[in-house]
Image (cartoon, rainbow, N blue to C red; front, side, top):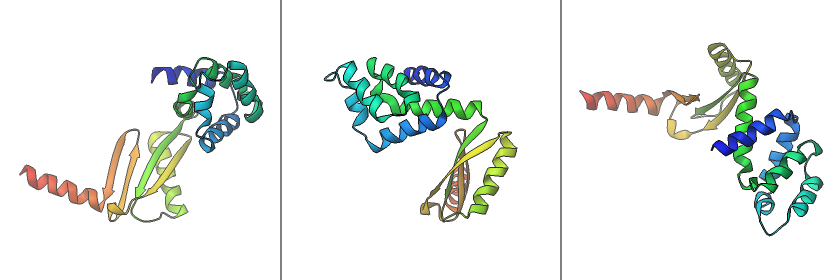
Length: 166
């Protein structure tokens, strides 16, 4: 885990544009074998560098070449995730996940975002919405490792727990 943080910090401090980082992340996501090839000892550093120069945005190539040279390419997805966390922290962007039993309207999603912005004093909220019919109704919200469960399923579970304790 620590190695991912160090690599992400190096990327972050190079002031590579967010667009270039996201483009590279998308390329890896669309080509899952690419990180394996770029971390393989079967290919020498110059071959890996040629591949990187050919398919990635120029701005991030130097970073990726160093990652490939030192054998860290297999963990590039973890590096990108750590980079994203650093970027969010610097820009005061909160990440949250909303679990709903039914689809959520754009207006409802925006209300959650605005409420979270005020509550946590952040500039923006990246709100991921996941449908989960097992909740029966209501919602559950995960923010900074804390679950706020306002679902029917959560309410029933809380009642069961309370009855068992008595």
